[in-house]
Length: 128
Length: 474
Image (cartoon, rainbow over all chains, first blue to last red; front, side, top):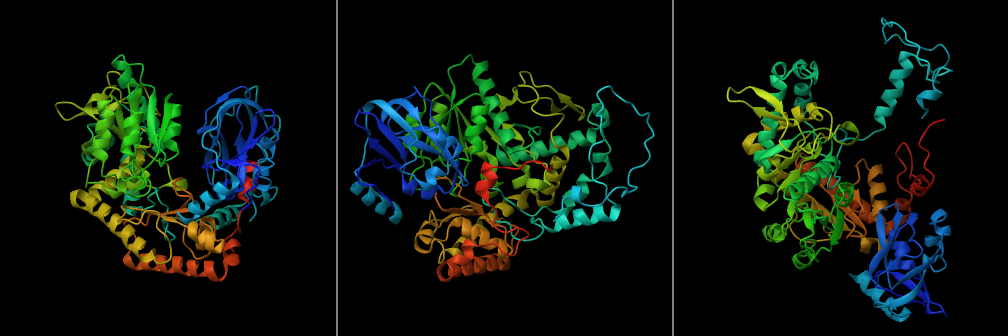
């Protein structure tokens, strides 16, 4: 399972990349895309909308089911990765390149894990 | 196989249709060119549909353990009764006094189904389960409005619910509040207590729930909702576990829907049509879709509009002949047979679960009701074989797969519901086939990744089907 060291992670399997200007990029982890299976649609968030940490901010549809993507941080949607609407398969093939949204004006970062902590958390997921 | 459009040829025809004996009318907007309809002979036509009929799989072909769908055997006597000319050679616009028999069927079915569910009144109009949910939610909405309480805008739905529950609530104009299930798959009572309030319109629930467990806190759950001023909606999807044994009305539910095509042995899926009657307690009866059948003092029946009816949800009395079949089933089984059917459904599920435990992890290793959920997470981790692969492998071995990847709270879920109409021997055969697949998963996982190989079409490209669906022939 690919878990890049430089990213932060949520227990609901999203990754967070902290940018220099204080904003963050958010996407879903390798584990999430593998568990969801082939993704066929994504409903992207809307630029300008406020997000709340640990609440749903968009959803993805795989051949199994529709699943909420939980926003790891509270802030404002600055940008969305429009290309994913046409190529949701990128969430499967390049989960750490396929960012979903850029979020700015961060007011809360919820409970974020380091790469090592997330790897340890995944161990407990697989035992459960 | 070839489509019917790709068969036959110019001039091939058949003599099934009589000569047209009404004047031909040519409206101004008639199409300029003839539609490209197939031209086939009677032989070609019969062979085409006969070939198609051999490529489908139904409960008349073999085991169909599709969890949450109750694919039970449909007794053929139901069809004989539904084909009686007194039921088929009538028109829905005939005066009430000329269709007393048909109204009698509706009234008798309503009375029997109300007594099984603990409800006071019922409408047969909704054409399917989700349609019933929508109708039931409109009753709840009308009830709150009639009391001048416009603040109740939220419907609470547990995260294990059928996807139709939140969808129906949204369709009916409510905001959906999702509450998590506890570790035992049942409602988290404390989470429910926190979720209810003056904005709660109601709660939607199945019991037994979607993981096949009877929620033992049900009386406390409905009491919490009622104390907050909400109404309790019972999704009848899982009634087959408890019909005639416990009644949703006694659990504290105010409104329910039934799926006659699941629980009451009428055709299901492509064999429909479906029927999703909605029953309610007396305080909601005045809002039912109208008209409903009422008996006069002299025993005569007529169609009457309830006082504050929400209006029609479907033409006439819904799928009337489905109600005929359901009533036939009720009368065939009778007062003793109905609870017996449920008890056998529960026994069959537990026996099959017991047989399969050695090979498959159970999501909840407890005595189940009419269905159980297996969690193939470990198998996938160890062998790479997923719930999808096992399902495809079953196709090669002549069994319809169980429900896959539902409920969503179990990730590699296979949900098995054998129903009461499978014998002990058949259940043992099913367990043997599942055992064979579990062995293959460890010895030759590649074979399962490539399954099925014996079906008319091999593994379908579901990703392409979702992303680039081709929905018409051209």
